Image (cartoon, rainbow, N blue to C red; front, side, top):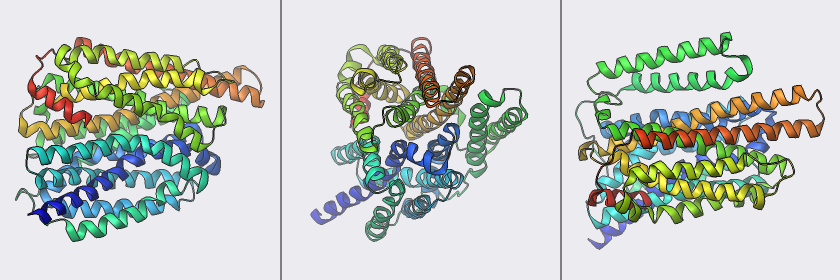
Length: 484
């Protein structure tokens, strides 16, 4: 029995390591972006697709990956995901152009979308409900939240000392290690259902529709909302999204059962998550460019500069469960986004000749304080009152909203910032280094202001849409799980 338990914990290490790679690859690329931009001569608007392609594919196929694990066996889907993720990471590291890297990042996100939910499903069936499962999920949660923080620092170290390609190549030996030992140690998981129907049309149409929508809103500020490129992209996006809705209403086993949105707080929480994620992804993107391109920070120094965010997220998130018990999640979700918005507004005043401690760090601290309370309260709001057999789907939808919201927000804000910078330089009637730098920083300022608006919208959603539900013991348990 003791050896069997020991084997279970080894399995947990392997699964957590796989999840660490998936989460890491969302944040690790931010610090390397200025280097890649110079190497491949990429524009700022195209540069954001290195982040967006991954998160959109990951978010768009996340629910499909979870469904595939139930239908075809968790072990089989997990191993396939690890293999594909490692292979694409190798190809990412060997990319010869910006376009090639963007396409490969989409496939990397697709692999992660199958690997991550399969790994979590294995944990849920390996550990019985109770103390062991709580410990396992605590480890899982710590890895998921810590991956983003480690990503920006590790990305800086790898970029500065080994080269940007190692941000991807590092996944290869880790992936081989996980695949080899998982194949030996993981028990064979039979499929949960005899019906093998997989809603592939639903996954393809929602992901394709969202990608076209992101492309349209990214191009619109520069080419105009009435340009052929914008209109055709928007039309194709709407058609695909319409097909998605029609498909989900028609098929017997939809990717997203719309009946789950009868829980009003779940629907509101997902919209709130979209706006918060849009603001957060933009902060990492633009703050990284500001620190390296304007303040001339090294990649390692840039990574260290971001660590202040997870420190304050951890400090506030650990106290959030107690506060939720006292005042309820609605009040917290009504105030916390405004705290983050104040941090974003502080960042919107970054000058050309700024400094980290005066112009950047205070804004990041306020952002982290707000986010710590938001993350915990949001999960509690989304899952409170939801029936247990739908809790997994509810959590999956929140994660999907985070990835899609981050992608959409980054595309919208990047397009606006680039257009503002271009107009500033054009109106200045010159292209000297000083004017270009001033125009670039002006674009960053606008980006942070728009991100602040996203955060304020999140607060209004909480105030007017989130319903007040009396805090229960279950809410406290959900809050503890969120901070684990």
